[in-house]
Image: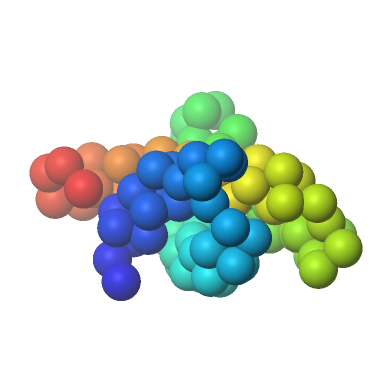
Length: 103
């Protein structure tokens, strides 16, 4: 699944209608895409906004911050949306830096 598709899926979820299983299914894809984009040179050394996104991204990837089976559904939902948002923003920066157009 493409990065834009996985983030769109996650960001279109609604707390009232999404199951924890839906969230748990989407989470590894979004986290994997986030991890992939954090490995790219997106200009964090020169751009404070990109550096802040990297900081947020690495914070989300920290195992201590990831939802577990004991995490309430609301916490998993918020984490998934945060991870998808940062991933989506990094994807936009990636496409701009590499002249790929809109993601």
